[in-house]
Structures are given as C-alpha cells and as structure tokens.
Amino acid sequence: MQIAFLTTDDPLYLPLLFDRVLDAHGNSSAVFVVPPLYKEQTTLEAALRYYRSFGAAATWQLAVRTIGAKLQRQSIARVCAHHGVPCESVSDVNDESFLARLQTLGTELIVSVSCPQIFKTPLIELPPKGCLNVHGAILPAYRGVLPSFWMLANGETHAGVSVFFVNDDIDAGELCGQRRFAIHPDETLDGFLRRSKCVAAELLLDVLRQVQDKQVVRTPIDLTQGSYYSWPSRDAVRRFREAGRRLW
Image 1 (tube, rainbow, N blue to C red):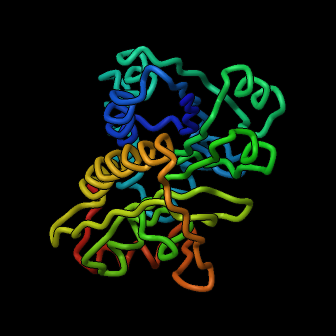
Image 2: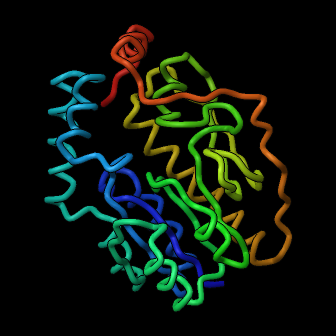
C-alpha cells in the first residue's frame, strides 16, 4: 500500500510520531512537508499571532526551543532519511502539479498529520483507498485548532486522538479509530503534546493495518454534537494559566 504523508515542518513533536510510523511503513511511503503557516501567513505574522495570545516570554521560549531542536538536527526530514523514506517540500498540496506527483508515485492512501492546509476535493478523491487525518482529540469534541491547549484550559481529565476519513468540511468525515488517555494533573502542554503524538502513532498504525486488510469500520462524524475551537485569545491563555497549567 503506497502511502503519502502530508505534514508540516515541526521539529519539536512530529519527529516522534514519524519515527514510529515509518519504522513500520517506511518501505511504501513518501512524506511531503508544507510550511507551518495558516491561511497564507508570513513567518512574522505567525509569530505576532502567537505573541498576542501567549505573550513575550512564551514566544521567546518557543523560539529558543525550536532553534535548539533544529541545531540538534531534529526534523521530519532526518527521520525520513533514517528510514530511507523520500521527503519533499511542497508549498500547496492542492496544486495540480503536486496531484500529478502523487499519481506518478501510485499513491493509494493519503495521511494528513498536522497539515495546516485545507484539502480540496481533487486531492481528497485522488487516492483509491481514501484520505485520512489524525486529530488530537476525541471527535466530534474539540474540532478546530490546538485541541490540546483547549482541553487543558477547560480542565478536562481525559483526552484522546482520532483518525478519520476526511471530506470537504473541517474535522469532518468518517471516523475509523479513536484512543483515549488520562491527562496528568501536573502535565504541561509540552508534555501532553509529546504523549499525545506517541498515542497517535500507535492508533494510526492500527488504522493502517485495518485499511490494508480491508477491515476498517467507518462511522460518520456527527457535526451537530461536540465542540469547535479557534486560535486562543489572551483571555483563554489566562484561563489556561489560572487552571494551573504551564506551556513548558
């Protein structure tokens, strides 16, 4: 089964997931990395958005940690090289030239892992086995942006990960796998994200086995239930901290 993973350039958390997944599927995979930006943002605009919500100290910490990870050569590209998997950069996953590239590779299944671009119908319908997305919450709850942050801010005691076949809506489609886990009382957002990515890797491997064996069960996601969250405001970050949570 030829798999194309679409993801983003994150050196902090995603290498953990890809190291585990490519260990099992490296011989039939290709990874495509897009910039970690939303809605045609520039890097400066993304930094300013983070600063407005989380403040100067948190923005500095994130920059230091990101630079440190890159200096230590932590990256998805390095994980791919370790497993002998092709890794390419792409600016627009919906571009016709990229769709042609996927067809040339004989792509049977697409898997989106934190890819910040909205998939259009031609991309979704290209692979014969479908297009999966990995989401860090128990759908239909916590659809949208940064579910990990919102679960901690809202005082949840349990979290989870979902894998689903996507359609044209955001965080919608047909659910095919979920896994729950407890949130530790003193857990930072950083620690939570690391643990969540490990859980996501194991869940994704289970779903990929089911897809390959033609045993996957698909259940429509009920968008009338659950919740949706956007980028956190300064007030939401204040509530996060008042709940005793820390970013790092």
